[in-house]
Image (cartoon, rainbow, N blue to C red; front, side, top):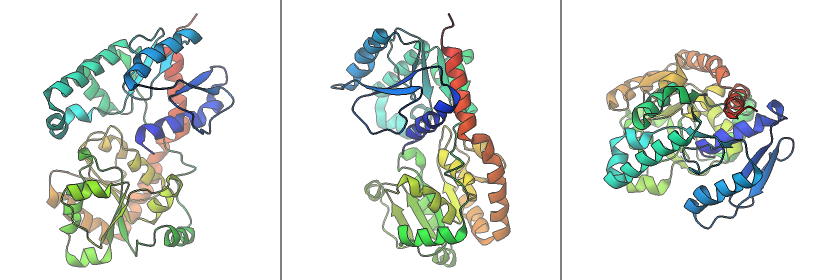
Length: 357
């Protein structure tokens, strides 16, 4: 599940417990088997022939027909002709922050994205974002008035992402992930440039032979073809799991010796919070909002300095007491990111954005 998908899923999962008075209509471009029917939530399908037409013609037409009080977008775009107030959600602005994206998109596309983002933020009654760091970036890139921006940290389902009995983890891991033979370092995420996976692979391959012999690197969600295109040669100590079932992620987190993310930029980084919730020690880059999310609960490294990564990961994988301390701090830290708190804060932003009679 993508980060935006998880954001929306976690909000809807808690919604019927929070708001039974407001009617929420989920607008889909095709039929889907979703789990949130009933209570204050219902669905409506608007067939899509063109993304732009759907966004900018079909949506405002439907909103006008039903007399909607508010349109809530879980990502950065919204219908500029919406007949009602709107909330748009900006999870990050890595397209404008990292040179790799500016080079890849080129001047015209960058200018279009920046102009569209400013237009959407101007149209929105409220701009929702998921960290103070991203709020600063929105102010810088889109020049949005600060009073429009509300920060609500992402939420983690602490009933799903939690510490599991070690014997259960060992048994399920053996069945689900037989390619993982012993201790391992875990990465969870995609292979996009800002995830900085080549750095992680180079760091792992630069470890002393004795260290690599005793611990594998597992990449969950990374695309094997993209790795090959980046010149990554297959290594029997590096395991790629491109399609881990969502329900099995807690097993993988629990089984790992340490969770690592080398991202150059993150608007929040849900896997950091998920790992903390599972009691997994977190070793993360200082990119974007990660230090804000991790706090003092884990260990940070500079994603531009390979030696910083190598020195610290060697220490972490060798020190049982250090990993235990990181685990306990993470379990304490992640309580402030529960989906109950997250959903309550989103519902409050929605309520404050609906015009009062």
